[in-house]
Image (tube, rainbow, N blue to C red):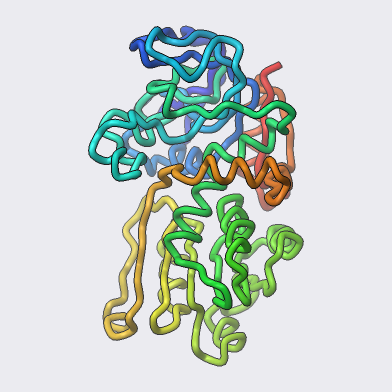
Length: 346
């Protein structure tokens, strides 16, 4: 089969690789139908994720068809259309029993990290019964790819950890796919204002279309000054960091109101300063989280009922064999105006 393989920082190739086989009776082999590229994949290619070894197939999102199911798999059978969760869960360990699937002792975020991932023609899914979701008949499978990672990530790590409440003023720093996913799902809780901060005018325009009430281009204006003007110097109730660099985490600290919540979503590859000299007395809460995908079933229902329309995030489509071009498009988002790219294995 063909797969997108990581060969160290800045190095990747579309190459021939052995088709995966069942290693445990709880595994399933899935033929990939649709997959995508995540900002985390770009972090990996920058060398930010040390656990990813040379030779690893990247990718942790997708939908596909069960090619083969292990003897202990009871929820799925050959031919089933399934949504692949970015988080693998055994369902039995101490962390899974807490609902903290991201820290599963025999799973967590392993796809495209410590085991081969979904940017390939086939993928092995461990613990298939608790790591896959059956695709309801008639569903838009491209839209469902957004449920593998970015929608639960934006919702759980940003909106739920930020405890967004009716009437809140929230700021989302970073209008990339995950930031926009936080924007879409924050509206479940009716905040009074949603301020999007990003240096890309195209992404800000998309954010406005998706429901942002205020836009700040932090390349052409001082974001902290702009927030102070909008909030009469108070700051925001919730600041969602959706980039993963020191500057954006620092900005969240500057704009948070007393009693506010900073929810970090971004994948950080470098240390960031925590300004306790100004925050120690402000009664703020700072949260971090790797998505647990505990809300995937709920989000799937909202997509099924058309309350949530994640297909809006898809801007470019490629064949899976064109994945190198897809990476070029996705990694040059300012020029290509890309959000999420979809690759189809047909």
